[in-house]
Amino acid sequence: MRIAAILVAAGSGSRFGADTPKQFLTIAGKQVIRHAAEALAPHVTLIQPVGDAEPIAAALAGLAHLPTVPGGATRQDSVRAGLEALAPYAPDIVLIHDAARPVIPARTVPDLLAAL
Image (cartoon, rainbow, N blue to C red; front, side, top):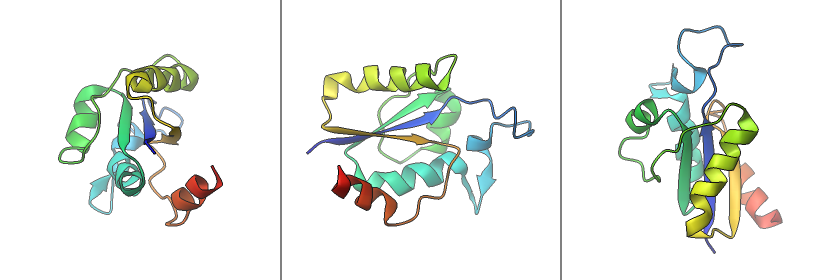
């Protein structure tokens, strides 16, 4: 079974109030987006980042992922862009995760996949 994850990282973080979007801030020595990607990686075949390619590539260096696709004007548009980029891979399941949410409890992804 081919399982993909769309890692939505196109937000500006304006409500957060930092100069840098929160997905690119560092917590515990890693950028937030990296924590999120590393939590998903053991459970998925493909990671499709969506957002600004340059900072995403730097944050995910050395971690297997598809080429980043640009985000849209809204989260819905960004998710659509991720889904369109994944279409040629025909995944059976697509998980969608906000890159600004670094903490995924250990059982969350396996339990979700079991339910699906």
